[in-house]
Image (cartoon, rainbow, N blue to C red; front, side):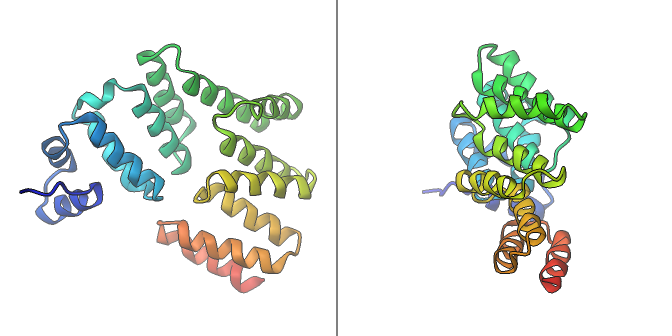
Length: 223
């Protein structure tokens, strides 16, 4: 009896045999639901680069999974947390809405990005009010708390409120690196040395990109 391999195992095998991950995934995951769960597992375990690689292989191969709005919403999440561009994230969400025009998750995510863009453009009142209104909805609260905390932290808003928003973001999404790093900076800025040490150490733990680790270590050494 054959044993179906995990997404991570398939990626490793593909690299060893110099095969494309596309051919391996099409061969081993004819079932769209199963493939979606594999990608979701990579995402939830913090393997963002791997999840992104698989998603883009699925798109390139025109796998039947590209007919799913949830697939493109997951892609938007991976891009958002893996430092994808605003253009890439928006394109994924618009594709989800093309498939399912009534999809509330995609609509709310786009609204979230719009309010964040308001903050970047200096429309602070408009952006903050929009984000706070989104907190009344259940979807994307972790990202909304992050944007509010990030804005207050770097625009010299109330530090205690910035910390509170970032902590709430991480309560909902414990491996959310953007929020974790901002929280570490907030603790350091507030001279909360013990908490800052724990937060930068957590960044080392959850960030799969080892090129960033020296940055975290420098901060740890400076505490």
